Length: 315
Image (cartoon, rainbow, N blue to C red; front, side, top):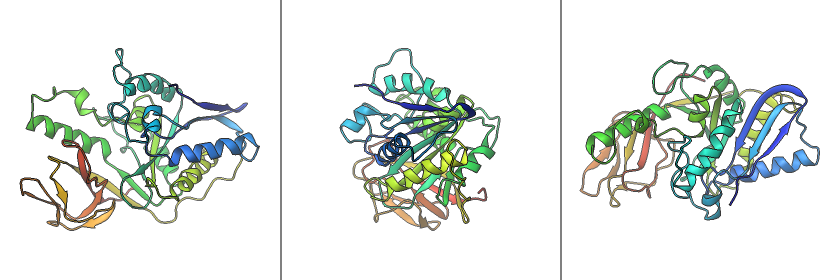
């Protein structure tokens, strides 16, 4: 098993972009879109005129081979190089992290479990905090406006870190506390920000939605044009936008935890609305009004069952 990339370097200076597909092996819309773009570059329909672009059609080949989310573990968690790789994703990280560091901009193409509209995950506002310091929010927002989607979500890493801290408090012997564990939510875009770049995760639709590869394909073309890497005219910015901020993550405690209905990402919830019931009979409610994100009825015990988000003014 090997890692495959394809890079195009233009004579003229410009941004260095990297595009990832199949970070999760059952999320193939990005792979399909990248292969389509590579064909169009090969036959001259897309020109690379400035900077450079690297395509990684299949980032996690083990997970992709088995058409499942992970190989040995979730690649998009605790993504850092390690001197003693054990799991297959450790080997990916040791190859992928230096590759990301060679670029300035990342577009990571994903899909999600339940039905819903495409959306982009953004990083934080500019800050100098200890968890995710960042200085390129304006650039990230500019790219987000031109991807071709209308929904934008932030707040991922600090919400995830709070969830990790809560798990540690509930079971302090299960995992050591500390900064490394609080950064367990670091994935591709988060790592990109640690090495001075910026990036967006584009959730292109439900895994098997035939429209998702088209969303991914259009986003690649728009990104190449917006960054002036290709010779195409830059796309217009989105005319209407919805910005949300994740504020809570709820874990699944047992295999008997069930939702009260089939939730989809971005379904509205009211304060006090019943979302699910624990295996021990405890009801789980929304603490405030907003939206449910990433509901996963098949989540493993101790893993994210669903997220909650609320509207903010950003894009």
